[in-house]
Image (cartoon, rainbow, N blue to C red; front, top):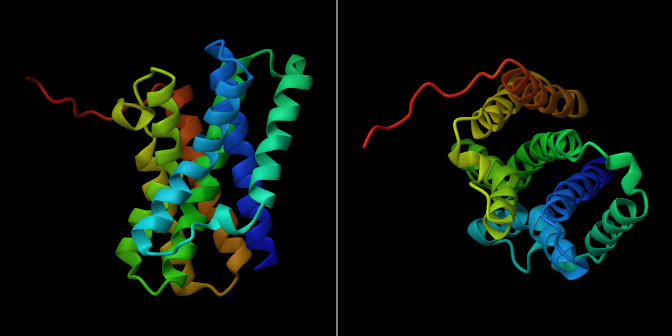
Length: 202
């Protein structure tokens, strides 16, 4: 549980950075950057907890999540020279974030006694909906609504995690491999410009 807790804090941290980088690229002020950092890092997990009936939601019971967002804000503002290529930095932290929260969201849902199907759905919700809120607030079309391979990468990671849990008791290995699946699919799809083939015609 200590390892899972550390990963949750780390996932919160990287998602907060991706949100703050987005706010920075949009020329938001300090307050705006804080708000975007918070909703990006906690929005998906908050929605998941509300849907599975886990209240108060996780971050309200543990101030370390707030401290982690504060640390992300400090790093982005005072070490901004290391984030010169904002687009690449945003992609890196967003990809790590969705990989982490896909698996962690699944695990929390399974721990709540819900079915594997619900766990997979909640894993995707955990991963993508913080980004959806971030994009809406920064006046961007959310990634999940574009042709990019985004939610599909999370689905592949979630399915991998479920299958590995059935055949392996090595929890840390299961988690690491499932995260790697999400990251690899996301990176390859962007580098090779692979998109979803279906686009509805009106």
